[in-house]
Image 1 (tube, one colour):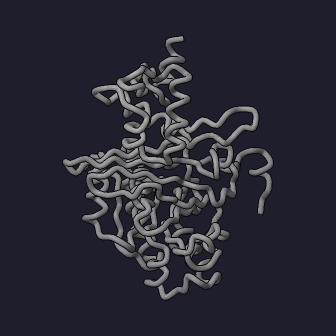
Image 2 (cartoon, one colour):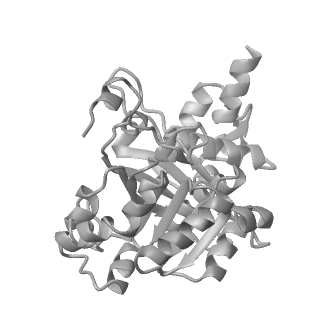
Image 3 (cartoon, helix red, strand yellow):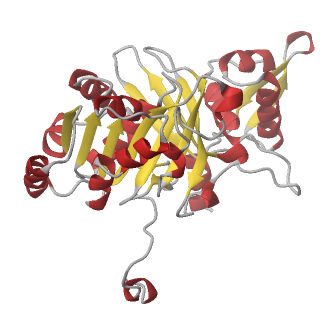
Length: 341
Protein backbone atom coordinates (compact mmCIF):
# COMPACT_ATOMS: atom_id res chain seq x y z
CA UNK A 1 0.00 0.00 0.00
CA UNK A 2 1.20 3.51 -0.82
CA UNK A 3 1.44 5.39 2.51
CA UNK A 4 2.10 8.80 0.91
CA UNK A 5 -1.59 9.83 0.56
CA UNK A 6 -2.12 9.12 4.27
CA UNK A 7 1.07 10.80 5.43
CA UNK A 8 0.51 13.98 3.42
CA UNK A 9 -3.14 14.29 4.42
CA UNK A 10 -4.80 13.41 1.11
CA UNK A 11 -6.37 10.28 2.60
CA UNK A 12 -8.05 10.85 5.96
CA UNK A 13 -10.83 9.18 7.93
CA UNK A 14 -14.06 10.94 7.03
CA UNK A 15 -16.41 11.87 9.89
CA UNK A 16 -20.02 10.59 9.95
CA UNK A 17 -22.21 12.08 7.24
CA UNK A 18 -25.68 10.49 7.70
CA UNK A 19 -28.39 10.39 10.41
CA UNK A 20 -28.30 13.87 11.90
CA UNK A 21 -29.33 14.84 15.43
CA UNK A 22 -31.08 18.15 15.96
CA UNK A 23 -27.76 19.65 17.08
CA UNK A 24 -26.01 18.67 13.82
CA UNK A 25 -24.09 15.62 15.09
CA UNK A 26 -24.20 12.71 12.60
CA UNK A 27 -23.79 8.99 13.28
CA UNK A 28 -23.16 6.87 10.13
CA UNK A 29 -19.73 6.87 8.45
CA UNK A 30 -19.39 7.23 4.65
CA UNK A 31 -17.44 4.56 2.79
CA UNK A 32 -17.79 2.20 5.75
CA UNK A 33 -20.11 -0.47 7.15
CA UNK A 34 -22.36 0.65 10.00
CA UNK A 35 -24.85 -1.43 12.01
CA UNK A 36 -28.16 -0.60 13.68
CA UNK A 37 -29.48 -3.48 15.78
CA UNK A 38 -32.46 -3.97 18.05
CA UNK A 39 -35.36 -6.17 19.05
CA UNK A 40 -38.35 -6.52 16.70
CA UNK A 41 -40.45 -3.32 16.72
CA UNK A 42 -37.71 -1.42 18.55
CA UNK A 43 -37.86 1.36 15.94
CA UNK A 44 -34.64 0.62 14.04
CA UNK A 45 -36.39 0.76 10.64
CA UNK A 46 -38.04 4.06 11.60
CA UNK A 47 -34.62 5.43 12.55
CA UNK A 48 -33.22 4.32 9.19
CA UNK A 49 -36.21 5.90 7.40
CA UNK A 50 -35.59 9.16 9.27
CA UNK A 51 -32.04 9.13 7.90
CA UNK A 52 -33.36 8.31 4.41
CA UNK A 53 -35.80 11.24 4.57
CA UNK A 54 -33.00 13.59 5.61
CA UNK A 55 -30.84 12.52 2.66
CA UNK A 56 -33.71 12.76 0.16
CA UNK A 57 -34.52 16.28 1.39
CA UNK A 58 -30.88 17.19 0.72
CA UNK A 59 -31.12 15.84 -2.84
CA UNK A 60 -28.85 12.85 -2.16
CA UNK A 61 -29.22 9.46 -3.82
CA UNK A 62 -30.33 6.71 -1.41
CA UNK A 63 -30.39 2.96 -2.13
CA UNK A 64 -32.67 0.81 0.03
CA UNK A 65 -32.06 -2.96 -0.10
CA UNK A 66 -35.06 -4.60 1.54
CA UNK A 67 -35.15 -8.21 2.72
CA UNK A 68 -37.89 -7.75 5.35
CA UNK A 69 -40.68 -5.59 3.93
CA UNK A 70 -42.24 -4.63 0.62
CA UNK A 71 -42.11 -1.36 -1.27
CA UNK A 72 -45.59 -0.30 -0.06
CA UNK A 73 -44.45 -0.33 3.56
CA UNK A 74 -41.24 1.57 2.86
CA UNK A 75 -42.98 4.31 0.87
CA UNK A 76 -45.79 4.59 3.42
CA UNK A 77 -43.30 5.17 6.25
CA UNK A 78 -41.37 7.77 4.29
CA UNK A 79 -44.53 9.66 3.31
CA UNK A 80 -45.72 9.56 6.93
CA UNK A 81 -42.61 11.37 8.18
CA UNK A 82 -42.74 14.00 5.47
CA UNK A 83 -40.63 12.74 2.56
CA UNK A 84 -41.82 14.35 -0.68
CA UNK A 85 -43.05 12.12 -3.52
CA UNK A 86 -40.95 14.03 -6.07
CA UNK A 87 -37.83 13.50 -3.95
CA UNK A 88 -38.51 9.75 -3.74
CA UNK A 89 -39.04 9.48 -7.50
CA UNK A 90 -35.84 11.38 -8.22
CA UNK A 91 -33.46 10.12 -5.54
CA UNK A 92 -34.65 6.83 -3.98
CA UNK A 93 -33.68 3.45 -5.47
CA UNK A 94 -35.63 0.65 -3.79
CA UNK A 95 -34.31 -2.87 -4.48
CA UNK A 96 -36.19 -5.95 -3.31
CA UNK A 97 -34.07 -8.81 -1.87
CA UNK A 98 -31.02 -8.60 -4.18
CA UNK A 99 -28.66 -11.57 -4.46
CA UNK A 100 -25.09 -11.00 -5.67
CA UNK A 101 -23.28 -8.07 -7.23
CA UNK A 102 -22.30 -9.92 -10.40
CA UNK A 103 -21.12 -8.28 -13.63
CA UNK A 104 -24.67 -7.65 -14.87
CA UNK A 105 -25.79 -6.15 -11.55
CA UNK A 106 -22.69 -3.97 -11.40
CA UNK A 107 -23.34 -2.61 -14.90
CA UNK A 108 -27.01 -1.95 -14.04
CA UNK A 109 -26.13 -0.16 -10.80
CA UNK A 110 -23.42 1.97 -12.37
CA UNK A 111 -25.89 3.03 -15.08
CA UNK A 112 -28.27 3.98 -12.28
CA UNK A 113 -25.51 5.99 -10.59
CA UNK A 114 -24.87 7.89 -13.81
CA UNK A 115 -28.49 9.05 -13.77
CA UNK A 116 -28.90 9.70 -10.04
CA UNK A 117 -25.34 10.10 -8.80
CA UNK A 118 -23.39 7.79 -6.53
CA UNK A 119 -25.42 6.86 -3.44
CA UNK A 120 -24.70 8.84 -0.29
CA UNK A 121 -26.60 6.36 1.88
CA UNK A 122 -27.37 2.66 1.51
CA UNK A 123 -29.65 0.73 3.86
CA UNK A 124 -29.59 -3.05 3.96
CA UNK A 125 -32.69 -3.98 5.94
CA UNK A 126 -32.41 -7.48 7.33
CA UNK A 127 -28.90 -8.94 7.66
CA UNK A 128 -30.03 -12.32 8.95
CA UNK A 129 -32.71 -12.58 6.24
CA UNK A 130 -30.22 -11.53 3.54
CA UNK A 131 -27.72 -14.15 4.65
CA UNK A 132 -30.49 -16.77 4.58
CA UNK A 133 -31.38 -15.83 0.98
CA UNK A 134 -27.72 -16.35 0.06
CA UNK A 135 -27.47 -19.68 1.91
CA UNK A 136 -25.10 -18.29 4.57
CA UNK A 137 -25.14 -19.08 8.29
CA UNK A 138 -25.31 -15.93 10.52
CA UNK A 139 -23.84 -17.98 13.39
CA UNK A 140 -20.59 -18.61 11.52
CA UNK A 141 -18.01 -15.85 11.53
CA UNK A 142 -16.57 -16.94 8.19
CA UNK A 143 -20.03 -16.65 6.57
CA UNK A 144 -20.59 -13.21 8.10
CA UNK A 145 -17.18 -12.07 6.83
CA UNK A 146 -18.01 -13.41 3.37
CA UNK A 147 -21.36 -11.63 3.36
CA UNK A 148 -19.79 -8.32 4.40
CA UNK A 149 -17.27 -8.61 1.54
CA UNK A 150 -20.12 -8.94 -0.95
CA UNK A 151 -23.04 -6.53 -1.35
CA UNK A 152 -22.30 -4.29 1.70
CA UNK A 153 -18.62 -3.74 0.87
CA UNK A 154 -19.33 -3.11 -2.82
CA UNK A 155 -21.63 -0.22 -1.96
CA UNK A 156 -19.23 1.12 0.68
CA UNK A 157 -16.49 1.15 -1.95
CA UNK A 158 -18.71 3.53 -3.97
CA UNK A 159 -18.40 5.98 -1.04
CA UNK A 160 -21.83 5.36 0.52
CA UNK A 161 -22.55 5.26 4.23
CA UNK A 162 -23.79 1.66 4.36
CA UNK A 163 -26.03 0.81 7.29
CA UNK A 164 -27.07 -2.75 8.07
CA UNK A 165 -30.22 -3.40 10.11
CA UNK A 166 -30.21 -6.51 12.26
CA UNK A 167 -31.91 -8.16 15.22
CA UNK A 168 -30.51 -8.85 18.68
CA UNK A 169 -31.10 -11.94 20.77
CA UNK A 170 -34.10 -11.78 23.10
CA UNK A 171 -31.87 -12.61 26.08
CA UNK A 172 -31.03 -9.16 27.47
CA UNK A 173 -28.61 -10.55 30.05
CA UNK A 174 -26.61 -12.64 27.60
CA UNK A 175 -26.80 -10.36 24.57
CA UNK A 176 -23.84 -8.10 25.40
CA UNK A 177 -22.87 -5.83 22.50
CA UNK A 178 -23.74 -8.26 19.73
CA UNK A 179 -26.42 -8.71 17.11
CA UNK A 180 -28.04 -12.12 16.87
CA UNK A 181 -25.62 -14.77 15.56
CA UNK A 182 -21.85 -14.49 15.30
CA UNK A 183 -20.07 -11.67 17.15
CA UNK A 184 -18.35 -10.96 13.82
CA UNK A 185 -21.48 -9.02 12.85
CA UNK A 186 -20.08 -6.25 15.08
CA UNK A 187 -16.35 -7.00 15.15
CA UNK A 188 -16.24 -7.18 11.34
CA UNK A 189 -17.50 -3.61 10.91
CA UNK A 190 -15.21 -0.70 10.04
CA UNK A 191 -17.74 2.02 10.91
CA UNK A 192 -20.01 2.31 13.93
CA UNK A 193 -22.48 -0.10 15.54
CA UNK A 194 -25.50 1.05 17.53
CA UNK A 195 -28.06 -0.78 19.66
CA UNK A 196 -31.64 0.51 19.78
CA UNK A 197 -33.18 0.33 23.26
CA UNK A 198 -36.90 1.06 23.08
CA UNK A 199 -38.24 3.08 26.01
CA UNK A 200 -41.80 3.48 24.79
CA UNK A 201 -43.02 1.30 21.88
CA UNK A 202 -43.88 2.92 18.56
CA UNK A 203 -47.32 2.50 17.00
CA UNK A 204 -50.12 4.14 15.09
CA UNK A 205 -51.63 7.10 16.97
CA UNK A 206 -49.18 6.72 19.83
CA UNK A 207 -45.89 8.42 20.59
CA UNK A 208 -42.79 6.34 21.12
CA UNK A 209 -39.13 6.89 21.76
CA UNK A 210 -35.95 4.84 21.89
CA UNK A 211 -32.35 5.34 22.91
CA UNK A 212 -29.49 4.77 20.48
CA UNK A 213 -26.50 3.27 22.30
CA UNK A 214 -22.95 3.06 20.96
CA UNK A 215 -21.67 -0.53 20.73
CA UNK A 216 -18.66 0.21 18.52
CA UNK A 217 -17.05 3.31 17.04
CA UNK A 218 -14.00 2.21 15.13
CA UNK A 219 -13.04 5.58 13.55
CA UNK A 220 -13.64 7.32 16.89
CA UNK A 221 -15.61 10.42 15.82
CA UNK A 222 -18.84 9.51 17.66
CA UNK A 223 -17.73 8.72 21.21
CA UNK A 224 -17.12 12.38 22.02
CA UNK A 225 -20.85 12.99 21.55
CA UNK A 226 -22.01 10.22 23.90
CA UNK A 227 -24.19 11.05 26.86
CA UNK A 228 -24.94 9.00 29.93
CA UNK A 229 -24.81 5.18 29.67
CA UNK A 230 -23.35 5.14 26.09
CA UNK A 231 -26.45 6.90 24.72
CA UNK A 232 -25.69 8.96 21.63
CA UNK A 233 -29.24 9.90 20.67
CA UNK A 234 -32.89 9.75 21.67
CA UNK A 235 -35.20 9.01 18.74
CA UNK A 236 -38.79 10.24 19.10
CA UNK A 237 -41.68 9.46 16.77
CA UNK A 238 -45.01 11.21 17.35
CA UNK A 239 -47.91 9.63 15.42
CA UNK A 240 -50.97 11.70 14.47
CA UNK A 241 -54.59 10.69 13.72
CA UNK A 242 -54.24 11.63 10.03
CA UNK A 243 -51.53 8.98 9.55
CA UNK A 244 -48.67 11.48 9.54
CA UNK A 245 -45.79 11.31 12.00
CA UNK A 246 -43.08 13.59 13.34
CA UNK A 247 -39.61 12.09 13.71
CA UNK A 248 -36.65 13.68 15.45
CA UNK A 249 -33.31 12.59 16.85
CA UNK A 250 -32.39 14.44 20.02
CA UNK A 251 -29.06 14.75 21.78
CA UNK A 252 -28.83 12.51 24.89
CA UNK A 253 -28.64 13.58 28.50
CA UNK A 254 -25.02 14.48 29.27
CA UNK A 255 -22.68 12.23 31.21
CA UNK A 256 -22.76 12.75 34.94
CA UNK A 257 -20.06 15.18 36.05
CA UNK A 258 -19.00 14.56 39.66
CA UNK A 259 -18.66 18.32 40.12
CA UNK A 260 -22.13 19.12 38.73
CA UNK A 261 -25.63 17.93 39.66
CA UNK A 262 -27.34 15.58 37.22
CA UNK A 263 -29.72 17.31 34.79
CA UNK A 264 -32.32 15.10 33.05
CA UNK A 265 -32.59 17.49 30.11
CA UNK A 266 -34.79 15.25 27.94
CA UNK A 267 -37.38 14.95 30.70
CA UNK A 268 -37.03 18.65 31.52
CA UNK A 269 -37.99 19.49 27.93
CA UNK A 270 -40.97 17.16 28.03
CA UNK A 271 -42.20 18.57 31.34
CA UNK A 272 -41.81 22.06 29.91
CA UNK A 273 -43.86 21.15 26.82
CA UNK A 274 -46.64 19.63 28.95
CA UNK A 275 -46.89 22.76 31.09
CA UNK A 276 -46.81 25.04 28.04
CA UNK A 277 -49.74 23.15 26.52
CA UNK A 278 -51.73 22.91 29.77
CA UNK A 279 -54.88 25.06 29.93
CA UNK A 280 -54.52 25.32 33.73
CA UNK A 281 -51.70 24.89 36.28
CA UNK A 282 -50.85 21.26 37.07
CA UNK A 283 -49.95 19.45 40.26
CA UNK A 284 -46.83 17.30 40.40
CA UNK A 285 -49.07 14.24 40.07
CA UNK A 286 -50.70 15.77 37.00
CA UNK A 287 -47.30 16.37 35.42
CA UNK A 288 -46.20 12.79 36.16
CA UNK A 289 -49.34 11.42 34.51
CA UNK A 290 -48.58 13.27 31.26
CA UNK A 291 -44.81 12.74 31.00
CA UNK A 292 -43.38 9.34 30.09
CA UNK A 293 -40.54 8.36 32.44
CA UNK A 294 -39.76 7.25 35.95
CA UNK A 295 -41.77 9.26 38.48
CA UNK A 296 -38.68 10.15 40.51
CA UNK A 297 -36.86 11.45 37.43
CA UNK A 298 -39.90 13.47 36.32
CA UNK A 299 -40.04 15.01 39.79
CA UNK A 300 -36.33 15.84 39.56
CA UNK A 301 -36.84 17.48 36.18
CA UNK A 302 -39.75 19.52 37.56
CA UNK A 303 -37.73 20.66 40.59
CA UNK A 304 -34.84 21.86 38.40
CA UNK A 305 -37.23 23.76 36.10
CA UNK A 306 -38.70 25.51 39.13
CA UNK A 307 -35.26 26.31 40.57
CA UNK A 308 -34.04 27.75 37.25
CA UNK A 309 -37.13 29.89 36.63
CA UNK A 310 -38.66 27.95 33.75
CA UNK A 311 -41.66 26.94 35.87
CA UNK A 312 -43.52 28.82 38.61
CA UNK A 313 -44.97 27.02 41.62
CA UNK A 314 -48.11 28.51 43.16
CA UNK A 315 -50.22 27.58 46.16
CA UNK A 316 -53.48 25.89 45.26
CA UNK A 317 -56.47 24.79 47.27
CA UNK A 318 -55.83 22.81 50.46
CA UNK A 319 -52.11 23.48 50.28
CA UNK A 320 -51.63 21.81 46.90
CA UNK A 321 -48.65 23.02 44.80
CA UNK A 322 -49.56 23.95 41.23
CA UNK A 323 -47.12 24.47 38.39
CA UNK A 324 -47.30 26.74 35.33
CA UNK A 325 -44.85 27.52 32.55
CA UNK A 326 -42.87 30.76 32.71
CA UNK A 327 -40.71 30.19 29.63
CA UNK A 328 -39.98 27.16 27.42
CA UNK A 329 -37.03 24.90 28.16
CA UNK A 330 -35.23 23.14 25.30
CA UNK A 331 -32.51 23.40 22.69
CA UNK A 332 -34.32 25.96 20.53
CA UNK A 333 -35.28 28.06 23.55
CA UNK A 334 -31.69 28.05 24.88
CA UNK A 335 -30.33 29.09 21.47
CA UNK A 336 -32.88 31.89 21.26
CA UNK A 337 -31.91 33.21 24.70
CA UNK A 338 -28.24 33.13 23.72
CA UNK A 339 -28.97 35.05 20.50
CA UNK A 340 -30.98 37.72 22.30
CA UNK A 341 -28.24 38.14 24.91
